[in-house]
Amino acid sequence: MERRLKLVLAYDGTDFHGWQRQAGVRTVQGDVEEVLRRVLGHPLAVRGASRTDAGVHARGQVATVTTESPIPAENLRRAAGCRLPPDIALLHVAEVPAGFDVTRDAVSKLYRYRIFTGPCRPVMSLAQRYSWHVRYPLDLDRLRAAARLLVGTHDFAAFASPGAVRTTTVRTVRAVTVQVRGFEVALDVEGDGFLYNQVRNMVGTLVEVARGHWPPERVSAILASRDRAQAGPTAPPHGLCLQWIRYGPTRAALPGTEEEADGPA
Image (cartoon, rainbow, N blue to C red; front, side, top):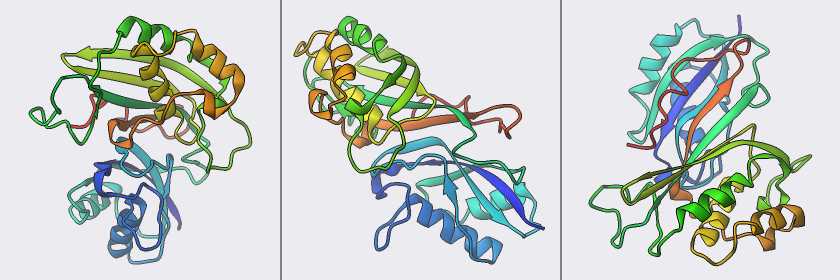
């Protein structure tokens, strides 16, 4: 009998060409599929909820795989987990209903973007692989004011990079939270789903505002323009981490995907 299994994965995206399988390069999906094929003993495809880009990290990526193997979920987690490379961890495995869709059934996602504002590179805190070093002062009041204008249901075409097929560019951003710890500024962006590079384009725009290049009100004008050229630059990938993906209680919610949201270790 076929079983659908839900996987929760964490990975350091530094040495990957993103999540999605690609010929001739190393990807997270490719590495996970290779290990699961060896453990389960048959051809398979792993489907991820978010196709994180090259260099982007994850603490709570969710994926599914279908198998006829009777191996218990926890045994599979241990067997596959110890065979994965050291920059991928298989955190949880659980059986879910056959109709569970890892993408369409997601109700909310949270990404964290980390910015380091100290005068020197963040090597002493070992954060150079996980944060964008911005060498100029940021006005956090302006940053928060601009971030508030991104919350709500909007057409985010101006914050979408070309390269992905989508039926609509309307998305709902539930919250943009700014946290400060010493020289580190963490932006948590929660939404029902995101366009290609949307979060990184939002962060690049917010940094332009915080530097004093634009007033916070420009964010509203950028949204109204629906023109990517009006927004700020794309923030580099290594500061971004997929923290968690939430599913409704009737659609196979899996404990452990939302509590661990403190950024990469």
